[in-house]
Length: 74
Image 1 (spheres, helix red, strand yellow):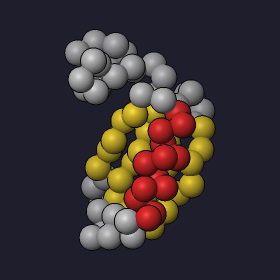
Image 2 (cartoon, one colour; image 1 turned 90 degrees about the horizontal axis):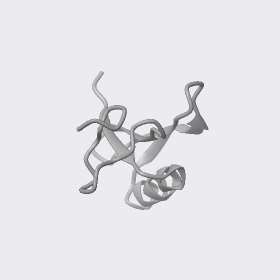
Image 3 (cartoon, one colour; image 1 turned 60 degrees about the horizontal axis):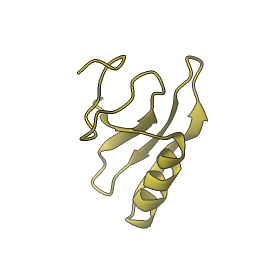
Image 4 (tube, helix red, strand yellow; image 1 turned 30 degrees about the vertical axis):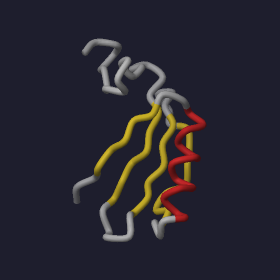
């Protein structure tokens, strides 16, 4: 199984994106939850069946253009 990922800058953005996904016909697969290492995520399937993880990682802030940076490094 493959999962597409979308990392967001703030924890509250996870719920906002999931709500938009549901309104567009997506199906929640796993409700939002905090994870043991300090992050926050939720899984949704889009109308075509692709699985998405919408996540916030407080230890890897996004760059100025929204790019993911592992531990702050580009």
